Image 1: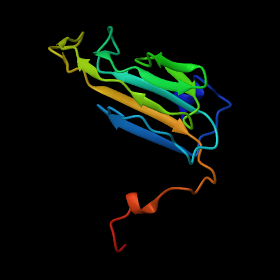
Image 2: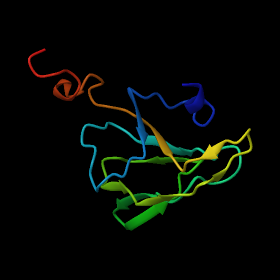
Image 3: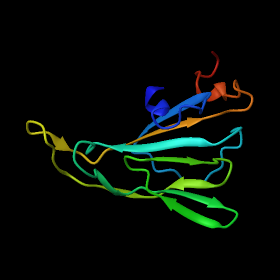
Image 4: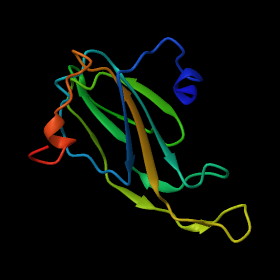
Length: 129
């Protein structure tokens, strides 16, 4: 939560999503009750970019907007159609001892569900639990 508070101290999420190398197809998050706050972190945090592409594309009433979230933040309404565009890893040497940058894309998404307990437990618990 400190990561979010450093960017938007007043935003109160009900849920947090963590992804590794996620490439999302166009979708709407219909259970959202407000905006999402998202970022994409790369393995190159200490020295540049870890991948090319991977923009967040949001389709709004005035057309599509591509937002580069690599090592930056975006607030958007997930109830509008959105997706993560394709990306390619950039390999290279890191600044540590022989550290390799693998071009891994990590995304962190804070969001608000309505009602807050509106989680599909079928995707969380094994069938028959």
